[in-house]
Image 1 (spheres, one colour):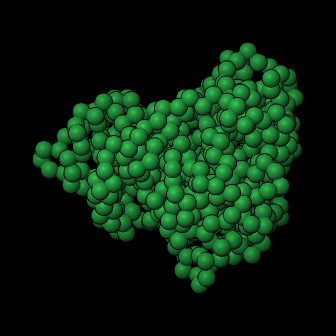
Image 2 (cartoon, helix red, strand yellow; image 1 turned 180 degrees about the vertical axis):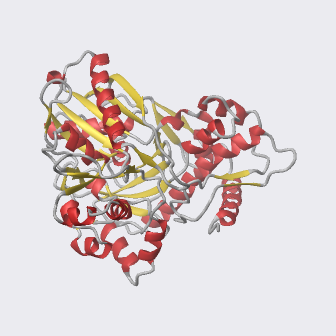
Image 3 (cartoon, helix red, strand yellow; image 1 turned 60 degrees about the horizontal axis):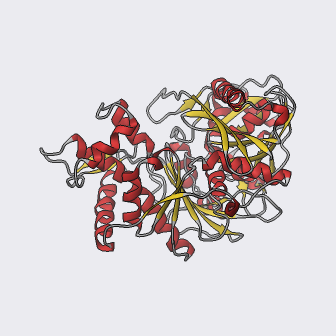
Amino acid sequence: MARFLALDQGSSSSRAAVFDTDGHHTAIVQRPLAARFPRPGWVEHDPAELWNTQLDAGRDALLAAGVSALELDGVAITNQRETTLVWSRRSGAPIGPAISWQDRRTADWCAARRAEPGLADLVRERTGLVIDPYFAAGKISWLIDQLPGARALAEAGELAFGTVDSWLIWKLTEGAVHATDVTNASRTMLFDIERGAWDEELCKLFGIPMALLPQVKPSASFFGDTTAFGGTVSVMGVAGDQQAALFGHGCLAPGQAKNTYGTGCFVLLHTGDEVVRSTHGLITTRAAQISRIKEYALEGAVFDAGTVVQWLRDELGLITRTADIEPLAASVIDSGGVVLVPAFNGLGSPNWDPTARAGILGMTRGTSRAHIARAALESIALQSAEVLIAMQADSGMKLHELVVDGGASANDLLMQMQADLLGVPVRRPHNIEATAFGAAAIAAHTTGSYQHAEDRDMDSTVFEPMISADEAASRLDLWRRAVKRICNWP
């Protein structure tokens, strides 16, 4: 039986898991990753810590599984996607921090680009994206303009840009390989998703030297050899975390959708080989590529999901542990009219408003911590419902089921809220490690040892809708009214 080490580098931790091709994991190890907030709206990571925590997690996962590197059939990488690094090709030293996907420092840069006639339309047509600080292009520009002389070095080919996958590949191969896959490339605002290549015109318009950019490969590819885990093993699969989760759930046919509940929520609807252009505030992105066929997805990005629970815990002290939110929220029958809009980092899909700020509306003197806790959980489900409603409008595909994963998907109350608002069943597989497994499955495709979803254990918990369509519509209407109040905040 084939075995793969999946490296799952996320916003708050670096994880690693050892999988076999049946989808069973023999070990999962997690190492926390710190985030820095040097200014309001800025979110950074230390590139060295990012690498070291992932390396330690991988080595410890192998130890826990009792597996040596020589017994592996390959290494797979999945990662937080838009987080951006630039480093020296000669020394391998980063020229600045890893700028997180959550970071909003380039809001003014993006506003200026959106004001250029025709540029926003060109970006959407070529890349499937909107001009927003979420994506990598503005972060690259910021990094090479902050260090004196960095732009000249970039133009001379002395610097390398990468999303987190590229940084890990570079470190794993000791600088021998500078590469990425199509899913990560499609998050930069620089990649033509239909041609499958970097777009020279967009790079010129954004002032990004093409000499910075990594080679782009299909997700199921050979990305180089590493000896970082004690023996020579090949990196055989790479995909951004959300596309890896889509693949890991077996959502490989048009109309199948998944939602990952983590720091943010990321909803993907597979659209097959068809590029669906959104008119409802979504983005079009590349799905994992395992053959010559290009595959696509519609995506909705909710910036703040798990962060709202962390905020209640760490800043307000309403709960002691993350798990405490479910019994607290369940202690009241509803939110008492309270709506919490967690726009800590602006709003993503379908609103795309970087100026929005979080707000709690509808409180009275009788509002309790339980009402606020319930409103916080509802905010996660409401944001996701908005995205899925937009997806169905864009694609013309009717949603029949939503498959879920991520840490917050273990919250039964949240999953019931999601089913109620969507009016369709929400299915939570027994194994919610879909992201790491998806990466391993992509690597298995490269080696020819992949097994299809129907051959794996698909035990699930299913949450059926329990409220009327009218009640769901009423809750969504109140939510939309609250969102309007916090948009375009001065």
